[in-house]
Length: 239
Image (cartoon, rainbow, N blue to C red; front, side, top):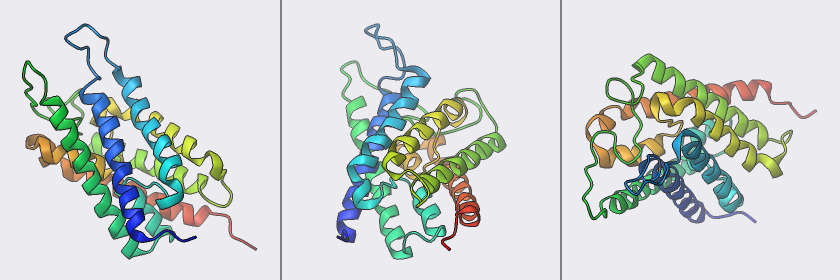
């Protein structure tokens, strides 16, 4: 039975909302050691938060919308010829709204600290690069990281969800791929590979986060398009 587009819109919005709240929340709320002395999640914990979020929503909404929850994924699937352009636009709008809502809830939670909360630059799990951001990688390294890792991410998605892939295990494979991506990219850019995930926190953080947002839109889309083109060339054709 075909799912109507409004249902897919809501599914993508909820899925992206959850991804941002869980993933960026893990980084912003639980990533560092707390005042109470509790040990922070660290790099592995944050990577797992993002990856497991994708696994959870892949099985929750995969049957409704395909669980893109990422404009780069939607654009890659569009280039691969597996979604209509009008549906792709609706998906991306839903993803951006969901990401913004997720970041807003995270902002309200962080602002509820009794001792007060000062967001500073790159707040709410925002992505970034350059002086003052984590290990201070340059623009070229940041762009290359985001483009190449999105390429790998999209290639895994297209392969595992294809007729030659193991679709029942696709959600797990895709989520684990995102964990691996975060293990590499968190120290470089905080890991985006998802323009919506970057958009929500950056809009609320402002400053450097919003001025650097362009890279986390352009690089993942470039990587996704290349992955779709490569997959179309390699995809086994029916006889």
